[in-house]
Length: 509
Ligand SMILES: Cc1ncc(COP(=O)(O)O)c(C=O)c1O
Image (cartoon, rainbow, N blue to C red; front, side, top):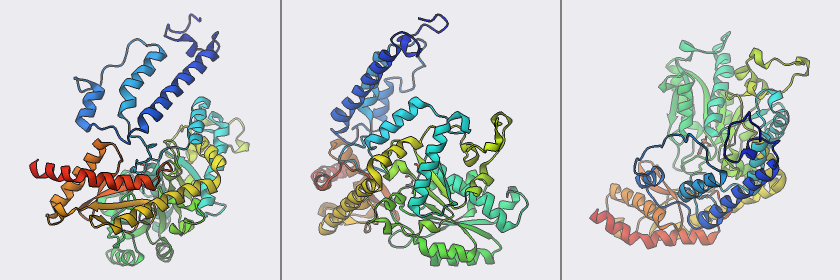
């Protein structure tokens, strides 16, 4: 063993040239996968969510101190570390693989995505300056081209992978500010400080929080986001936006962008994008579409029509770690013109000088807020090759069909209320059994929350809760190829089974 390296457990794992290094690595990988599959088959398939509530979870993880313990001074053998994983981490997970896990938008990743993620981690390509991850640059160029083609953007379009939809929305708004607001205001440089006063961006009350936070981060004042009420199906329509634009112009403000959503977080609603696109064109506004979740419906020849008009956008957020069934993390921003990303993000640090600038290498840091990024593209590129657009699209249809089935069951029942017809694969509903039907709204809300928690403890299925127009609903986000109609029936059966005790607890608690 080398004497210039620290004495650590399993030294062959630290030195790839040590005798037995390959055997040691293979053993670690085999042990790791055994842990992964023990978790998957023994735990994740047993229940969708571990049963403890937050305070008990903390106590379970941190122990009586209830705070993080200090970093270990001395290392421990890999087998011990894996044992700690088994004891402290594996029992406390949300289990997206469970067939009755109807999550926020956490899909079980397809196997090839995990394989790609594993290879990406070993390859350690820094997808930043071209030399730090040469092939990573090309795979990202190819897979973002596939995404741009999927939403119907032109050849000039360009995409960049992000940590998720929050980052993609922030970057999309940054491009809108740097390129479009600058043009609207006819400035010589990027808008800053007082230039941002009076700027207006339009979005619905169903917009993801990252749009308002993005505008904050970009230096806009809180009034910049003009929130317009969505319609009875939670969709943003063009008419109220047109009225808002006219009022704002009359008040001396500068409308410059519409931020629409194709597949909202709450209900999966899809804004009236085609009408919003014509309005944006007429009014000279940038159109950003947050299709973080819903964009995946383009994978299905049958269901693509549920998210029309993405091709009309100036920028689109699309998140493969939602409905493309990808391992975390991978989001994407697509823009209609490649040069807009460069105009917004390109810088020229001297340490990234190229020995052959005439080659014009593709440096991804020039297209993103982020610098060094993981080789995110590989898992999506490999999954897409493995399943094809048709295979991925078939999974979308399967989820959409389950959502329709669930909606049908709810509509037919006396004791359930469907919030609205699902446009994609999110279904929001309430359980209102006879025992609480006459109660006041706050009681019915408390009952939904208590029922959700009872289901979590029960462990047969999992849904979240959300608030729609001030009332509490159960929310099933069906992004799960493992689910079948049997799990939908099981979900409704479990809610009914748990109901009586939950009502009793409400009355006595
Ligand atoms: C419509 C929409 N946009 C953006 C996001 C943010 O995505 P992420 O949390 O992956 O950054 C979400 C997350 O659920 C979403 O539903």
